[in-house]
View 1 (cartoon, rainbow, N blue to C red):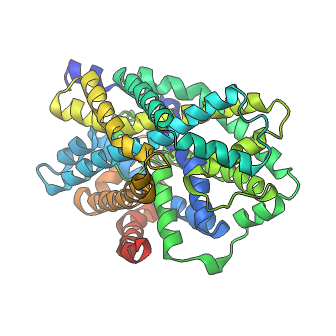
View 2 (tube, rainbow, N blue to C red; view 1 turned 90 degrees about the vertical axis):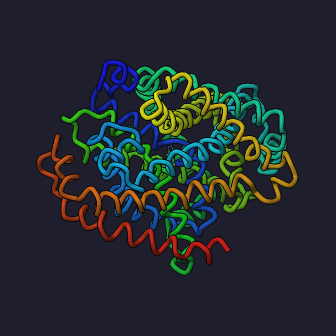
Length: 452
Ligand code: TRP
């Protein structure tokens, strides 16, 4: 590696810095917005159960696989595959990841923009009287269907993301996550306690935590698996890219474990806020979809003394959590153009950021802004296709590539650096070679009937 490459790529300051940055990527709207949405649409507790299994058995496997590939090669996804298996079609994994990253970034930033809009609304006291679900429904509908506002906030989010990425991985990504993630965690625990104390919250708790197995079907499993990949930032090379910045002395296994654990905890806690509130204050269905959390959270803030302050803090932290994720989405294509095409970081960040903004416009206008886009649910389609199917497909290819092209032995050698006693070694080997790929293939095979 020459001097220019070194300075353009960077390294994490320490193991804890990596865990924070990777958790920063993983924890975001996926946990707080998307998780409650898909739980509500897929039968509640039974989905939660399948989700936790999917994270433990498949998510953790794929995360460790991506980190090992990334650290071994010290490259972006395309370069990484190329280094292990030069001039082979497996590079496709990398290209698919870059495309998927840009597409997820486009609609994800729309929702992050909603969080920004809600931050401003809360500061100006818009939710002070929002005691009933009719009021919060109307506020959301008016806001999300206003083309000017949603596009403005989309631009703000992508602008901030582009700016941070153009500054590089260390200065940009590390600084944000260190202080703010722990505060988010504490605030969420507090809000969950408040929600659980609402009279009538019991129904929500059983919807969320008492599985009804008659609701288990292929759709539930597909969405649970897709949600696991989405929430853990897997299947498109994010963790290959982040892994490439880890030093050889770090323990990949425990790092992956910590990221999976903290990410899952935050998602579970988010559900503990949403569902008790939803059932205690009737009017919003669990199947409300992408507006769900924006309709429910204000109901809690209107019931806490000093609710404006809590609301402001919450939406600030949600926005920060979202931006630590958008930067990881943008980092993948940027790392590719910097490493493989010799672009400068600035140029790559700016051009891809601008492109993502344009691609985000139809998503932004599909929640009431433009009739046709709303009718075909453009954002929902993007979310399903890139946030579920494409990630699952990418994860499948990563498992196959590691298991049968690079080889588990070599991967275990990479993992052994920084961790000489990897006790789950046989289990992980089994999962990466057989369990995960077979489970993903079965699910992808049923997709046509499911999506139908
Ligand atoms: N995991 C993030 C969240 O839960 C979103 C995200 C960031 C992501 N990078 C990703 C999703 C890569 C899939 C792939 O909010």
